[in-house]
Length: 381
Image (cartoon, rainbow, N blue to C red):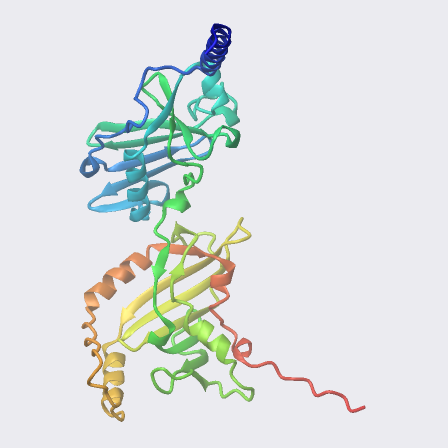
């Protein structure tokens, strides 16, 4: 290679190196802090953590463990979505540093890593603070800022350990971090498949025997039929199955403690009678005040041994079905423990559940809404 060419190449390499060094200095890059690929919280003692705090400029969420149960403090310690807590802790334990930046005020502002309670910083420059603690010790305490710009590469988020002096670009996307108390609640209320429901009674609330309507399956697995009132029009089978399946994967949006003050009047209640003797009562309470997408329901449950025995007696007298002995046979159902039902009812009696409009509309209280629409006769031409 000619010496002139070699000189030109050396000059280009030196120039590129100088530009790169200048860019790193402008961006605040430092060689301090965790090494590239190192885990920021490698020694998290999973079994000692008992509190998770998520603090944003607008809200603080505290999820903590008390007497073996994780609950959301801002919702009177209603049970938390424990798998969600575990997933976040595992993600924190596996955060890896991909790039380090000096924690200058300019970088903290640019990457939205100022403390969420720093009122001197504008709201769009403040991050979300995450703390994992337990037994008076702090195991992780850091701020989550902006995600990595698309032009700079794919994925990643900027985080800043509060006790440190270095900003880290980590290898995980944290933009969907939940910052509202309701988002940390265990959402499932009950999960009762429609085929487990034998009968539904709709009654006027506050009474024991004023029946609006009764629907019952004539046999397990059959489509429900009206017992009361005897409707002239045909039952809409799709609507009936919607009603019977309303407790299947039944979830809430939010929850509140029960209170008689300011509660809307409850006009009707629905009693779901199960084949195993449980009776779930649902009281639709209407649109939640101040909300346009949340509807309130209250629930109770009790065990009726009489109903369970009645079904067993009826089933015993039924024509036995033919069984294919070459196929694996289902196990006998577990015996229902009335004490378990009592504990579930004790839980229900404390709360008013907030559900979606779609879920609320499954609790049909007007018998006419369960009927097929009458087709209008076409006028003769």
